[in-house]
Image 1: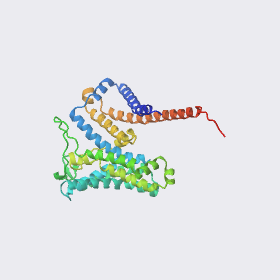
Image 2: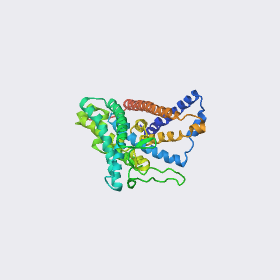
Image 3: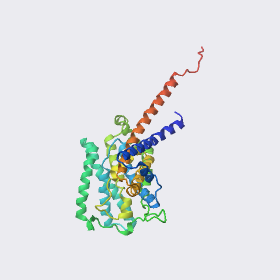
Image 4: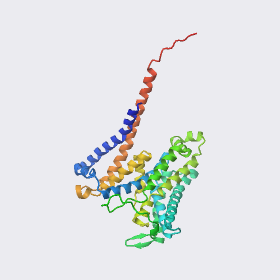
Length: 364
């Protein structure tokens, strides 16, 4: 297949998915009695500088969540517990950081490592249940999400203090705060100082997946467990390693906000990030660059939803519908393009076999 044709097919799936998603969203708006033109005019308007910063911040968090889910997906493991792992890790990190065992930024670095260990430990429970008792990681991680919510709420009441209407942990010492980065002089919001964690995690994921033996074993096991066993891969060990790594990345999700904005863990912590990361990973086809694009799309939709009710008189809940439709359309579009590509390859092979070969003379 020609290079140009391959590039066209690679672009066809996301373009087709976005077009179909736009059509379906417009039909939903019409059925609900809303104005699709006003919706798209608001959604496609260029964001203000403050909104651009919010999009970057939200996308960096969603990117970490998407990477955490993608590590499991590449292993054919469905880690639905990113939400619980993120909550447990952020709470443990906030409590640890507030104790100020180390001075300044040493405390910050140590806290990030503690968060990764806490997320990995919580994900490790599901991994052990999978390899020792054969419990599906889907069931165990869903249950662990519920346990994490209740456990963290209980511990927060034990060690936290009331601040207004919320309960929060002690504040992280100011010497360990990571200042934000000002992108625009007129913006009151700064970019997270720890946004580079998302960049490092993406580079590390790409190198690990494509340049190491571990990454090869992970991909091989995800494609065919029996083939991986035949080649000498310890599947049970890979399950444990993959879940631990996924949980460790999930532990990073709350760090930019903890050290950049909130400086403590409270009962008003942002929820749903782990579940959104699963959709972002699916949207990005578990590829580092694809996940980045998916995170930016989701962050853009969420930020642009804020003025919908004011400017267009449309409920912002339509954004959740749009996000779900986009994910479904991407999955379907990639499957359609994959089948079409396979058909083209089969046709090319058939034509090559039917083509007459060069005449040859047999000499004695």
